[in-house]
Length: 347
Image 1 (cartoon, rainbow, N blue to C red):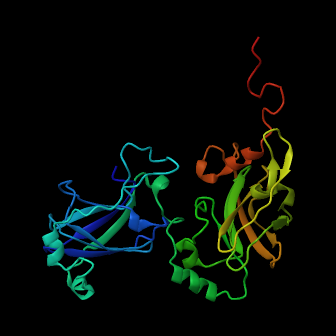
Image 2 (cartoon, rainbow, N blue to C red; image 1 turned 60 degrees about the vertical axis):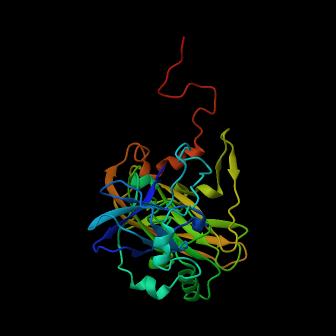
Image 3 (tube, rainbow, N blue to C red; image 1 turned 90 degrees about the horizontal axis):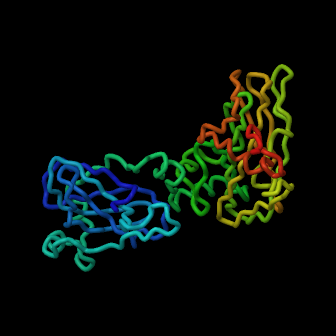
């Protein structure tokens, strides 16, 4: 019931009240409508004297009364009702409640009518030690759900005035999760038109290209491929590449095509797969993807794939992080009435 996300705070100075600034960069739209719970790491007790000074998506500012000094505190900022399934479509997060002693609030001028920013800055600071997630690989917001601020996004656009959309090739380990915000990772790295990866022979190598329709909507987009060429003489044919978003096979094994569109100001994700042949030449091979949005300029994505000598017999299916099972979306296995290998008919 405490939630899957928390911030570890550390207090080193004894005081009746300490302040803290938390740069949590949250993707949820209404953080001010969600509760925060502060727990003393040593005693497990919930701290009741706590005041929410500022709660925004980019950061939070709090004042609280520490009980253990020196000590650590855990701030849970997405607590939900204990009797709900945490992976439900709509999670009923707890609403804010005032638990602080009115006398403590008044003593530190934390009410709306008496709040004093100068007095707040004069309070001893607590330190943000770490932002943590339960089962970190599954629940962590880092790095793809750590949002960029509005100012950072505006600055990014200002630095690319001639582009109607921006591209962000991304590794398969970091699936693009947000469609309405940019991750801080993209601000720090900037848009690019190149991608480098390492694949094994026999692997279905998956990667992404994020398309940020920053200035115009993209009603439709097509992709052209070039062979990946190695030196000397090796190549991976363009026929080994595909974009899962643009087509494939339906449940009955029939070919289908799909339209990829992105609303203005939104982010769309193109998932690509390259089936590396078992006999592919080891070494680096290079080629190009050409993105052709309707009504906008084309973008050429330079691909560079380092092929190792090891053969991946299962194509990468057993390693979930490789995202190789995306190719199963187009599988025709068991479409007909024949028994699927290696199974045998029952007599």
